[in-house]
Length: 441
Image 1 (cartoon, one colour):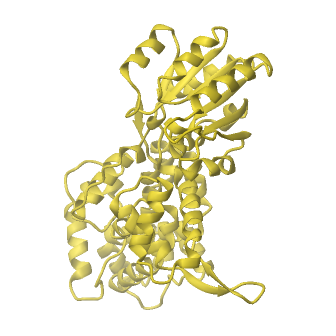
Image 2 (image 1 turned 135 degrees about the vertical axis):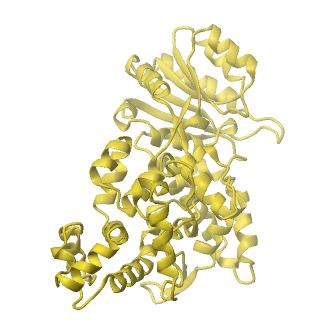
């Protein structure tokens, strides 16, 4: 079973200025994300500016009257956050101006948000099209007569359709809370740009029942190890499991053993760099091109771990029915199986159920946060092409990199990687005074 994630909408909610108590009530499961946002200066600058802009929209005429007739400024008007204004000015962002009216402040806030929003692109994963996020904050041609007036009228007439009544730059519609879940938000912002977001693994995650079953298996074991059939598993999906589970629980696992074939993806070479669990990587040579010995070696090694090393419980990561022979050969061991939906057969699922062996899909774990490992693998492959890069087409080179690493991605994700990393490659002098090619990370 899966649940929808809220990591992306937590970030959006923070940036647009949703009240802190509402943030912590509605996005309690994203406390780690909120803590990072609280500590991020670029995010907080946009948050404070958006709060000021929304407050000005909601009290535009009252603010103008207070400035014109009572000679007040923002810091002496109750609906503006004085602490936010002081902090922005400490950071070198000028807010308070003399002899200003509401219209001038609206131009200033819009200009400042337009100038600073791109500094927040690092808060979002590479697989999200940044321009779609940016458009929620950036108002184009705002200096043109009537543009901001039109935004004001639209907002005030449809304020109930804006998330928590905070202003965003969009065409308001009666679609409920657009920042309710990542699924809903991504669907809507892609549709607003005539696009479709289809990768459900980015916004769905394993539910508490799945996680608790895994934790229960680990806690009830004397010693636990993970055995991975690399031929029939995906390294990035396994990483999504390792990253999505409680790290204190995972620390109880003795080791991860990767049983690999020379023909699998290079992603397996990188897994050890992204987990604290000791990783043993065994690459099994083939006796012929057609016959792999991975399942044979995996069975022999697991049996050895059980009898010699006292490991009593094994998490088997494989979708190949060959592992059933391994399970039958160790009747006194405990097993938990992790598989992929598209590779598992109904017969093996029935056998596991009949023998009381818990199994779950690694596809159920959210893949959104696996971008760090994917980038590392893609960058390493890109660097292999540096000696022969002259004359290469950036997009064709990008397709070669994805094909070689077997990183799955949509056409737009690949184009985004190409634009962000391949087209921005540059020459620099290293410490020895020699030219090297550098990736702009």
